[in-house]
Image (cartoon, rainbow, N blue to C red):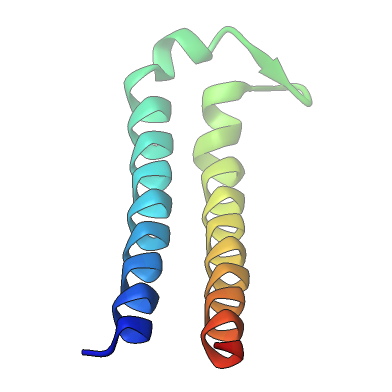
Length: 81
């Protein structure tokens, strides 16, 4: 592999690993602390219910958007070099 390809895959792996870690941490924390989060209200709903119903879905969409933008930037950087 050329140095440019090595750098591309290194950046891609770092981005993917970081976003996978964020996703796993969000899912684990919401499920693990659901009882404690039940007492916290968010827009009139318990925070654990809100995160289970909408928050994690929105977080996943945000993670996908960050991945898409990040990969676009990485690809653009590789084309410029």
